[in-house]
Amino acid sequence: MLSVTTTAGLWLAVVLSGLYHGINPGMGWPLAVSSAMMERRETALFRALGALAIGHFAAMLVILVPFSLMTALVTYERPIRIGGGLLVAGLGVYLLITRRHPRFLSRIPPSQLALWSFLVAIVHGAALMLVPIYLGLCAAEDLDSGHRAAQDLMARNATLLGAVALTHTAAMIVSGGTLAYAVHRWLGLSFLRKTWFDLEAVWATSLVIVGGLGIASAL
Image (cartoon, rainbow, N blue to C red; front, side, top):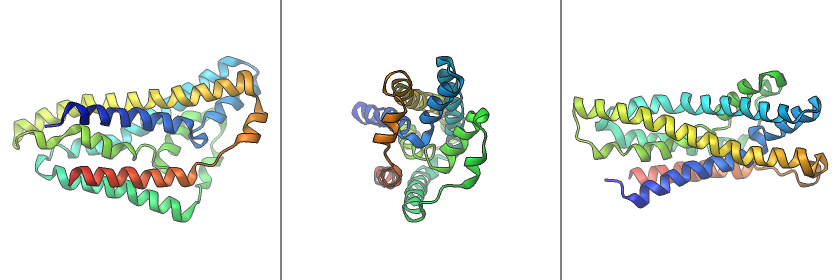
């Protein structure tokens, strides 16, 4: 049975990973600033943030839904969690080695920010990072095996999946949106030029860490 402390820690990880994704410029908040400045309207910033949120949320669902369905196989819950952790850590190692950005992302026009956000979250592993955390919250080992247990798990996981994706996306937009608004309203583009930071190596390393923690928790 998951303790209250463990559950709270996993939900905190959902929020913190969302805040972390939002701060990362690669998740798109500078594009929201750009939209507002090009249209010379503050409402354009919030519209762009909304599109980024929709794309990010959709990416969370696309990645988490298959794992939600697999956790119905109660007997194989531990191998699924280990496999999810290996997948996340493997992507982190790959990003550390290659350092390449898919060129097709740069060909998506600014009018399709939701699609851009969706693809970025998939390609860069933002959605995948949630998998070990989500599987930890599912705690399938707490249920007895059997058909009824599997049905109960499916019903519970559908609600949990939505809550995890929504909470994570909300945290992402809060942190990224706050940065975007501050740059647009007060700091200006000079702030971006002077303080631009590259989180790519940190991002890839964090995937390896999250994947490793997911494997450790399963074992």
